[in-house]
Length: 116
Image 1: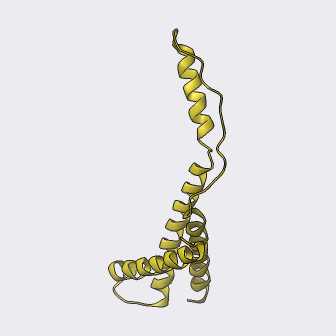
Image 2 (image 1 turned 135 degrees about the vertical axis):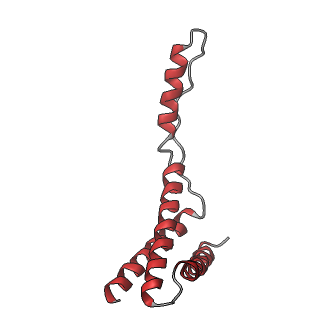
């Protein structure tokens, strides 16, 4: 899938969720409720994107390797643990669109909150 299309699809999905949140959380539509809902959805998308970014970057791989090495050192008949090999740094296709669309909605909600 083309990355630009993914940005557009994620933006439409986020706007759809903004209207759903407005419908269930606030009975009246206004610019303030749109700013609040876009803040919630933007922050949620940003957090999910950053979690995917950190996990795929291999941040926890060395911690896992260290615990595995300590566990094997306590066993008497254990073989040596293999060398730690860092990841190649490749990311999923959805990682950057989630992060950037979350940042865009977050900034939009901050700008709207200044003028409401």
